Length: 379
Ligand SMILES: Cc1cc2nc3c(=O)[nH]c(=O)nc-3n(C[C@H](O)[C@H](O)[C@H](O)COP(=O)(O)OP(=O)(O)OC[C@H]3O[C@@H](n4cnc5c(N)ncnc54)[C@H](O)[C@@H]3O)c2cc1C
Image 1 (cartoon, rainbow, N blue to C red):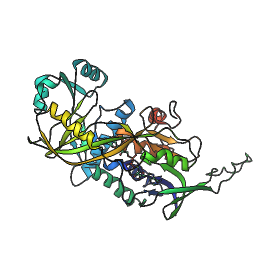
Image 2: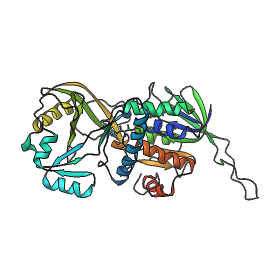
Image 3: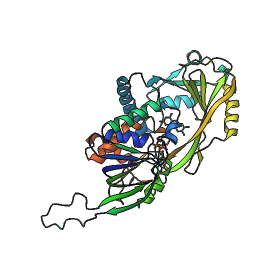
Image 4: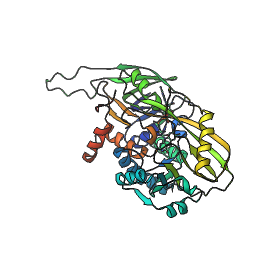
């Protein structure tokens, strides 16, 4: 099998890039698991919050929301809905957040209780609202990316873990004798993925928690991409939940909760170093979290409907790693999205596709440099 671009990883990063590249490139995507998005991409809280994360993430989130709004408008039912983010804290904490973030509007106590009547009023001093935050139907977005990519000719192979690679057809660079330079003097990759042998000009590492180890298979040095587990539970409550209520989170990000239909989605916001793998819930984290949420709301949590854990993977500076590797020609990184992989996917894939095609708009050069695998501070 032969292609221009081989994407390793069938999570939201790999699928969104396949969507952007497939109209103009022969794309093959390989996923180790039997189904797509088995790992982190099916375990998120599904939020797109413009006020969450450092500047580069906020920019990518704004762009992605605009893109997903356009996608949503093309689908039979909307996949994006408003989910305002209510941040609670001391007056000092909230004032600082508001000063740093144009999307956050301070609310007084009465306004806060109107927005979220289930809060215990004595449990917070101040609050601010990001009214631009959204919730996205992630399975529908993933299916959009997949079906658009396949419709444009991409091949998607599940149950196909990349296990070995060799470089074939390497030629020495043109000798400066007027001959046309070789289009690919570095050679092409021949990759073993499950029972497939795939030859590709460019390989993209979109392997999430495994990105450093996949890079190693291709001879690229690791960038210090560290997986950390985080859990979510869906719980039932004594008092009815308002399905259109806000997501609520303290300024120190020590937990969050939001409506999930008539249930409540809750997270202890833990960030515990973990090995790449099928992350599992630590029951004690959820038990302790329920007590904390019962202390700030009068909803009265009655039971856990289901719970899950995923891995948020990022390098030391907390920004994604996107761009060509400087040591292995034609090896491209699309990894390290941490807790922002859903809210940035559409714009990050567009940026990556521009870098791969060599037609990145001039205005995006700064953003690309900020995310470069060669930036200072990475391993
Ligand atoms: C609890 C939780 C809540 C979150 N909430 C949000 C949120 O609200 N908003 C937001 O923006 N983000 C959120 N995130 C983060 C977001 O889910 C991730 O950033 C995103 O899913 C990462 O996508 P990915 O495609 O890089 O990784 P993954 O989905 O893990 O995909 C990587 C894929 O690569 C495959 N792979 C690995 N090795 C190989 C190999 N050798 N060969 C072939 N395939 C391979 C894996 O099997 C995997 O399927 C949350 C994360 C967690 C854990």
